[in-house]
Structures are given as C-alpha cells and as structure tokens.
Length: 337
Image (cartoon, rainbow, N blue to C red; front, side, top):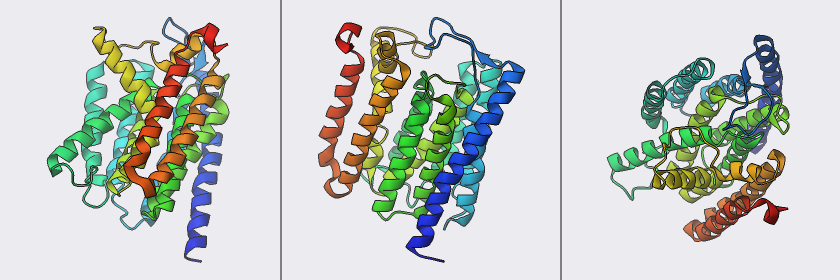
C-alpha cells in the first residue's frame, strides 16, 4: 500500500496510537506517583487547593519518544531527529531532578541551551527560519533565543488544569494540518499528530479537576519538542502559520514577562500574574479558561490555514483575536460574571 491512503493510515495511527499509549502510561504513572506520595502541595502561588500528584508528564514523554523514534526511522532523513530525541531525554532527566529535589536556575538553563544548540542542526533544508531575510548566523541566533524562550514559556504556562495539554494538542494538530495542506514533509505532520495524541491521552487525566499534574518533566521537554516542530514548519516556508498556531501562549507569557520586568520584579520567580491565572482569581474555573483558549486556538488555526494562500495579511486578525482574549481574561470578576 502506498500513496495518499498509506499516508492517511500512518497519520491516523500516529494520532490514535499515541492517544492510547499516553492514556495508558499516564494512568500507570498516576498510580506510581500516588504510591510514592510525589505530590504538588498548594502554596500562595498555586491555582489548586489540594495536594495533587506531580510528574504526569512521564506518560506524555514515554509515549512521544518511542513514537517519534519510529517516525524518524521511516522518514527520508532518519538521523535528522536524533539531536531532538537526545535533547528531549536530557531535558527529561534534568527536569525530573528539579521536580523531585529542586535545582537552581543555572543547571536547568544550561541544559536547555545545550539541547537547543544541538537541535538547530535538526532543522530541515537550509534551516533558515526567516526565509533568508536575515544572514545565516543571525537567523540561527534569533531562532535559538526564540526556541529557548518557548521552552521556558511552555513551562510557565503549565499552571492550571488542562491548559498545557490542550495547547500541546492544538499545536500538534494545527501543525499537522498546515503541513498536510501545504504539501510539506509528511514526517512533520506525523510528528505533530503524535504530539497531539500524546497530549490528548494525558488530558483524560489532567482535565479539571485534574487527577495529576504534568510537572517540569513533561512541560520542559514538551516545549522543546513543540518548539522544534514550529521552527521546522517556519523553515519549510509557512512562517506565518508557525507564528499564529502558538500565538496565545506566546502573547500571554511574553506580555506578562515584560510587565514584570517593567515593575522591577524577579522574572525567574514563580508567580500568579499570567492572564490565565488572573482569570481563575477573578471567578472563572480551570475548564472555562481552557475552553476560551481552545476557541481562540481554533480561530488561529483557521487563520494559519488561510495564511498558506494569503501570507502575512492574516496576521492583524490573529493579533486582534489574541488581544481580545487577553482582555477578556483580565476582566474583573463582576464583569466576567
């Protein structure tokens, strides 16, 4: 069997197989975390009120690694994904140590830098994310800084039930659709659907009220892998789509960082000042906030698809949609009621 039918079957298996494995593995991980009493206890920066098992990201990553390895082995360039797989394993190890014992920012950040620098060699083609608008080394530097920021912002945005898993599913599925419609490397769509399936399997356990949390062992390597997919999509041509698909996470985390910088706060410290966190503080529950984000993500995906024909002309509509959601999440409780 070959041609479109074989590709469709492969895409279906990537999504459904990853979902089933992640659902199964996350359930096993939950039992282990409960048995070992590995819990996230509420504090003044938390958005939950009871001790909850932390480390559910193992279920996602133990799914994603073997599935992505299988995809890489069947791709046109089997070794391209090797730095990504190796970097993911390294970040899982460092992040799990941070989940369990707490590491300072230096070892975490150095591990992320090393993974990103090695991962740049895995970009497709000439690896020019900005399509030749910048000199090669400037393009590489900006891509590396952006990727490093995405790894960290994905971790920052994992603060309420279902949000990080929903965003990972949205990015993976959206990227797969754009790659398929844009006739790009089929491996890109397969990687995306595998990520979406793994995130959805985790969401069965993480949807509000969550039975467990992802933890850094999931959010950091997941941000790393999704960041690579988005850069690979941009390097393949559809850079506008690569910017639109994760636009909510990019905007919430970046605006919050800049605001805290302007106020002279220590930006590396945990806090509850993201827009999604303020929405919880002002009366919405976790599921309501995540549904709003998913509605925005659906709109951003439609614009990303439209960008294949219209290019950058769709960016103002995407920016307006993101600003409207941020404003909605920031509304006082009495206005949101």
